[in-house]
Image (cartoon, rainbow, N blue to C red; front, side, top):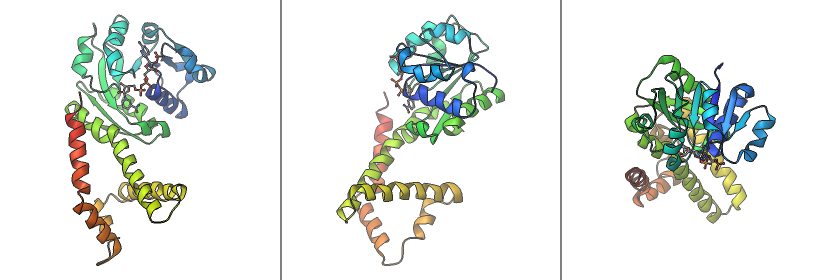
Amino acid sequence: MEQNIAIIGGGNLGQAIANGLLSSGFLPSNLTITRHKTALLSEFKLKGVRVSSNNSEAVSQSDIIIIAVKPYKMASVLEDISKSITNSHLLISVVSDFSIDSINSHLKSTPTVYRAMPNTASSVNESITCIATQKSSESHTNDVISIFNTLGKTIHINEQLMDAATVLGACGIAYVLRFIRGMIQGGIEIGFDAKTATEIATQTVKGASELLLQKGNHPEAEIDKVTTPKGCTIAGLNEMEHQGFSSALIKGIKTSYDNIT
Ligand SMILES: NC(=O)c1ccc[n+]([C@@H]2O[C@H](COP(=O)([O-])OP(=O)(O)OC[C@H]3O[C@@H](n4cnc5c(N)ncnc54)[C@H](OP(=O)(O)O)[C@@H]3O)[C@@H](O)[C@H]2O)c1
């Protein structure tokens, strides 16, 4: 990618995006990262990335702007950069719960705006990032996809589904981690030390995901392969369902969705 990119808000996610770009071969000299505490970006400065606390200047020097500040800072950041943003900028917001209409309402010009919702697995390049826009162009969409593909996988969704993407993809990390914690606790109860139980549970979850990703099967088709009639797997699975396993998960997902502010 030839364009200059500015990441406004070099915190956890901003830095994960910067690392993804740099590890995919993006030139450090084409990247600017901003935050107030620029000393915390020294490792990027050493790599040749421009580090600054001047958002307006960073925007003027870049073609693509990625905003990664906390939602309550978004309005003031947009007002800060509004005078430097032009119609030809591509603006990508990873800020949760801040719509494209709200973004446009804080800007004087009309850049192309995308929202993107990655998750914390960005830091290990295994995110699923949902992207959405109102005025899609093939070249902008390709740019956005190629940026977020450096952090994992990217899919294009309707903006109306952005809250659902926040729940299933971003909160989803926490649901799966709680599931893994439950498996570890069960593993300890049946005899493993915590370290061994963790190794078995984490690799089993990774393996189960790969079975679906690589074969494209429905989960139940893979479950059928491990449930011997009258066997221990189906006995345990059915007990989990009697205790409300799938129902608890579905209700939890709906409750998260209902609680997006
Ligand atoms: N973490 C994730 O995986 C994830 C996933 C999906 C979406 N998100 C969204 O991404 C956004 C960032 O999340 P995060 O976890 O990366 O938060 P974070 O670690 O707090 O990063 C935000 C950064 O913004 C900087 N900042 C604050 N005001 C600024 C300003 N006026 N100009 C430039 N930089 C400014 C802060 O640094 P200074 O204090 O030094 O300025 C801070 O480092 C949030 O809106 C969140 O909802 C995060």
